[in-house]
Image 1 (cartoon, one colour):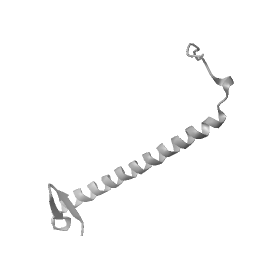
Image 2: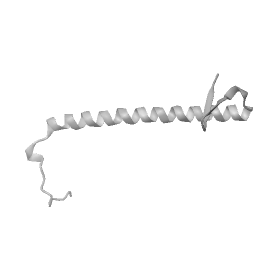
Image 3: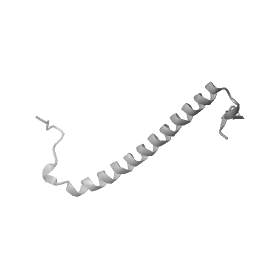
Image 4: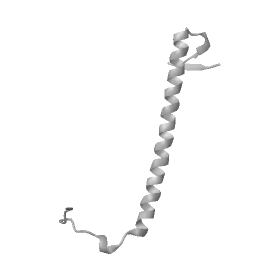
Amino acid sequence: MYRYTYEDKVYDVSKLSLEGVACFKLLADVQERIDNFGNEVTIAQASAVALHQKMQEYLEDSAIVEDNETEE
């Protein structure tokens, strides 16, 4: 049984109209996508931290530029 909670009330989705059930399924799908995006963002952030740490191994003083130098 699927349940939907709104304003402190719990609804049995199977007792709703066909349109209500369809809307619930879409909402559940969207929420799952949001959760997955959240997981992907967390993984991407962890990867960025690891890559910043790895990048430090490749930094050389000869690559330092002054603030007044511009790219051409």
